[in-house]
Image (tube, rainbow over all chains, first blue to last red; front, side, top):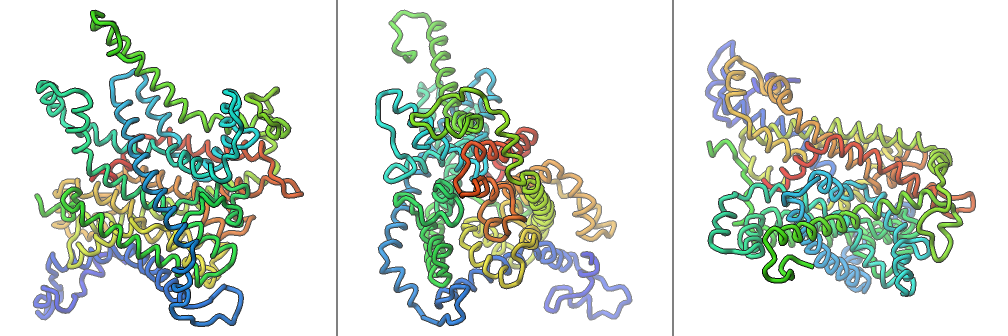
Length: 331
Length: 287
C-alpha cells in the first residue's frame, strides 16, 4: 500500500470533489486533498496505537473500577461507585497520596537545583570537562533495577558504605532501608539521576547569548546576580519541562519496590510505610490482593488528578512554553 | 576556603589560583559522590558472602573474588536472559524508531484538519504516566493470550512513542522545503518522499532514537515481569529475582556482580552513542 494509491480516491466533501466529478480517465487530485490524506496515513500508526493501547485500556479500567473483578473468581459483580466510596474512606489512599505529593514537592525541586548546580559547574572552562560531564551523567543512564540494587548495597545495614561512614565517625549504624529512613534513600536514588537535568540545562545554558552576560558584567552584576537575573529566566522553559516530567516520574516511580528486600511485585507487602507511595498502594491492591476492580478505581482517581494538575500547569505557563505546532506557517 | 577569604593585598593571580583549587576540589568531590555508589556495587560484587554479612562491614574485600562474575554468569542462565533482553530491545527499538519517524514526518510536513488537536493529544499523552495504562493493558493482553509472547513489544513498537515522534518532528520540520517540492513536481508520493529523501537524511536522529528506545526497553522492569514467565523474561527481571539459593535466600555478592554485568552494556552503548543520545534528550526538552 502506498500513499499514491490511497490519495487517488477522493474524500467526499473535500475541496477536490469538483475534480472528481469531471469525467476524466486520469483523476486530477488537488495538492491539498493529497496532503490531507497523507497526513492521516502518516499519523495512523500513532492514532491507532493510542486508541488501542491507551484509550481502550483506560476505558477497560474504568469499567473494571465499577466491579469486584479479581481475575480468578467468576462471581464478580457490578458494584457501581462502591470501589470509589471505599477508596475515599480508606486512610491508606489519603496517606499514600499525601506522601506522593510530598515526595514530588521535595524531590523535583531538589533534582532541578542539583542538576542546575552541576550544569553551572561543568559549564565553566575546566580541564577534562567532557570527562566530568560524562561521569556526572552516567548514573542517569543506569536502569532502575541497577539503581535499586546499587542503593540497596550502599545502604545495607551490615555491609553498606553509608553505615561504614557512620560507624567510622562513631555514630550508630542505621536501618536505612526500613522506617523511618527509607524515604531518604529513595530521595537520594532520585538525586543520583540529577545528571538528566544537568544535560538539558547545559544545552540551555549554551543557548544563552554571550552578549547578555557581557552586558551584565559591564553593568557591574556579580556572578550570582547574573545567574539569578539572566540564566534562570532564560532557562525557565527548560526548568518547566523538568518540573512536569519530574512530577510525572515521581508519581509512577517503582523505586520503593526495587528497594525492598525482595524487589519483585511480591515485595509490595514488605514496603516500609515511609515509601508507601500512591503507586505502591495500587500495586499492593493489584498484585498482593488481586483486587483489579478496586485498583482500577485507584488508577482512575490518579489519572483524573494528573489531568487536573497538567491542565493547571499549562494554564499557568501558557506564556512561557511555546510548542511550535505549525513550523511551516512561520516561513 | 574561598577566594574572598584570602588576605587583602593578595594578587589577582593568587586569587584566581585559589578559585581554581576550590572549583576542582568541588568537582572531584561531587563526581566522587555520583560515581561512588556504582563503585560500591562493583566492590560488593568482589567480596565473599561472609564479608557482605559481617557487621561492621568491610571496606575492601580481603581477597578480590573475580570468580564471582563467572559464578554470577553461571548460577543463572545469564546468557539466555541477556539474549531475551537483546531480542526484545532490538525488536522494540527498530519498530518504534521507524514508526515514530513515519508519524513525525506527518506532523512536520503535512497538513490536515484536526492536526493541532492531534498534536495536542500527542504532547498531552507524554504527560500520562505509562504505569497507569500498563496495568489494564496487561489484563487485556492476558485475555488475548499474549502473555509470555513478545507480541506486546511489537504492538508498542508499531504504535510509535510520542517522545520520539516529537524528536523526529522537530528534526524534519527543520529541513528545507525544497527537499520535497521537486519530488512532488516529479509525481512522487509522500511515502516515497519520506523513504527516499527524508529518512536517508536523518541518520543522527534515527540512531539517537534507536539508542534511547533500546535503553528504555533494556531498563524496563515492570512490563517484562508482568508479561513474561521467568524463562522468557529479561535480564532486568532475572537480576532482580533469580539470584537466590535453593532455600530462597538472596546471594548478595553474585547479585551485585550480575547487576554490574547487566548495567555495563547500557553504559557502553551510552558512551559510544553519547552525542546523539544527549542531542536527542535536550532537543525534546527544549523546543
